[in-house]
Image: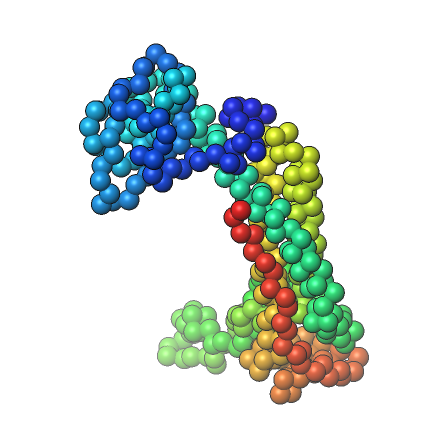
Length: 333
């Protein structure tokens, strides 16, 4: 397992100082060249800001570096080696030590992210439950059902447009000058024919307030997915992280972080659902449905009037502004 390849348990790794702010404060610091025949172990690395005094390098035997490694060996002493000098001094043995150190850094980074998820899990899960059972989300779902009952065809067409992200279109009558010129070229003399018109699609833009129409992959689905991914991280944590390789840990963490991002975006979409009833969007819907045989949509102030295929009209009142609980962010432990 990865924890063994670093030489440390995950508990030890989480407590280790892999990034050292003040290398000169290390105990048992030695300025001599470390014995090259003793296997090196990288304790940590340092990256000092520009303008800082250069640090002593045991290989160069001079103050030449701002970036480097704190090295130890079986003597128990600590040595400072510049980032370019480690490979020069130790050759292949330093490459092995650096590979082990990089594994520590990678695993430590994943563990920090995993522990942050574990620490925030109770409050994030509580917020998920609050949103799922909120009156605001219920009202959005109810308004969606109003449109579905008024015209299943209208609802289905709009929901598909939201799911695909495709803009609504209307067909406009456009004069086809090229076709007229082709026709007139075949006429005798200077004779010309009447104008030729064609119908061409014209984009009306995307549906505003799409959160009111999305019923698959919506806010609820993303919140439940986030809850499930958090539970998988908690199961790993309970089972002791040392039992999982870095790929398993990374996948679990990335899945949860990605689920958090998706849930946040879905919440934002729902909070803008009332934009469906803005004047601009209602005008868009009216123009889009003007030639539809199965339904017609009209704007009346902020209200939507739906006429189904049978000619029955349904007035849908605007959705009140939606404010949902803020989803807490996973902060690094």
